[in-house]
Image 1 (cartoon, rainbow, N blue to C red):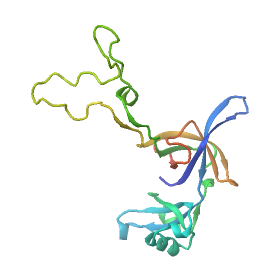
Image 2 (cartoon, helix red, strand yellow):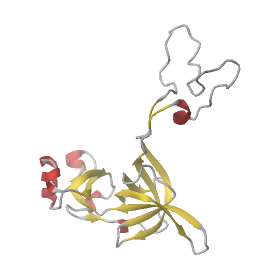
Image 3 (cartoon, one colour):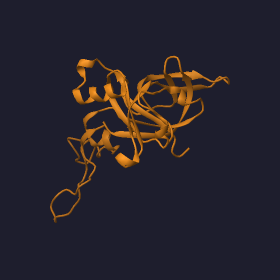
Image 4 (cartoon, rainbow, N blue to C red):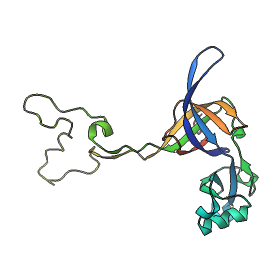
Length: 210
């Protein structure tokens, strides 16, 4: 991976192609992301670039993070993200990574955290069917079905599909296409949908399996 950037999902809209086709796109505020730390193989065992995103008031940043920003000579930011780039040695402290590293037509992988849905049942969480509505089944029809007929070991085996917390998972969608790049407003239009709610932080990197 030679290029990547951190951004914020702003929402979805649609654009029209010259042929008149409607293309659904996700609007992403991508960068600018200043480089606040460089990692190398001699000291850290691997190459990586640590970037910052989303400006924050200085009084809201703890002292260790403030020291990192001060050393890099940049303003204070809300979050930092490590990007394992093959060409990490080409970057320098304080250098800004902007959305112009991508171009229209590029294939990218987008990683984000999915929307939280709270405690849900097996139908919403695992796409299971309802129980029969007749023949003595009930009164609950949306509950989980049989958990197995074993008398030994007389317990429910692990990893069964049951009700529980749904969402807030790290998900990557591969081979999405960059439809448009707006360098003036630091905006990327990505074809299709990306994981996460509006306002969530996502990472866009060049496609691994393009």
